[in-house]
Length: 561
Image: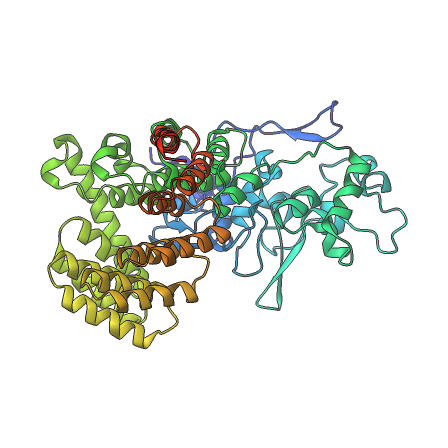
């Protein structure tokens, strides 16, 4: 019997009652799920179903997520990642390190809500909003007091604002609004406890200072500590890790690994931590990636693959290949894209058929969005990794026809030309692109590298220097410029450029290692040792760096006084 027929019952006179009401999906995930009173906390709690998929949230996410469409076969109630690519869950240009939404780019509510303790507790969109009108089910604080005891939370004892002329409500403290495009205020659905102490430490915003604009974050943090004690509670515990990653702190790897491995952390934060671990992949944290690849949440599986993006495809084939047949489309297309560089002749025979099926999925996704230069460029990258040079060139050119100043397509087509022995064509392409977009730092940087390969040193250095001027916070640009100076025999200038880079990026490993090398080669062993010791602090446990420090110490001991 088919599902549709099973949903029907026969009435007199051959009339049919359709219990599905003609709907494609029934939001019946609440069946068998009940709220009960927790005598310890005084709050209501929900006995959660074992199924991780929240059909209602995934359905609402189709409109309320920052995403792009990868298939037109959307069916309500399934994982949103089946038909949409979710933007990097907590990308730093969209979110603050603690997960709060910025007002620079549209964030929507899907990812913020999936950060929340409410989502973890089983709350769904329609607990608070009428699904047809979108309005709150109950006005004001009443929507929160459906679950939170009024005698505990709807009181000055909780808010500590009994003297306030306009007392704050639940939303103003726990869902502050950010305004997009000047006119569109959006409430942050991560429903967080205000943390002015993090504002004082990390520069993140907080609800207290949205009202008390004349006061400092430390003032607000001191007030919160007087009211609630020194131990900060809160469900969002990952701000330090993402701040460490964005600033290149020495402990970034350790902090990110903890977030990625913590089962109590929201899955969107774990997925983001896995992605942020890409520069730190090592045998020591490989197990975190392995567990992420088998996580029930597709966003975490994708994050684990992002973590492995810089590892040669052949080395991770056995880890990633099972995801070529993942039930979620965005996972299997990410898997085939990650493994594309492995030739068919080198693939295990048992995996070839599912690789080809996943490859067809990947191509179909890009063809669906063929009016966007990003998709044409992604498809070109895929073809290039598979050794299909002519197809890759055609797609890069198609991307540039759609958007002549689309930088990734220019740079990648230049690299394709270089790999094909057509360096002169690539150089001409870059020169034209720089002329068309003179303030694009990435183009100046790519042109500088191309000129280095052509041994046009002074022109190359000029382009690299211009890239630094346009993007002063790009540590890689400054490092490469310094290496170019050193290669040109301008050693003191190179060392000076690296020192300046370290003032902005004190933990940049490449700059520190270059300073060790340049100083040692110039006979400045003491300076080389100083930077080697700093490098050892940035990369604790790296045996090669420890050996370098020991070698420099021995050299110091043997040097004449």
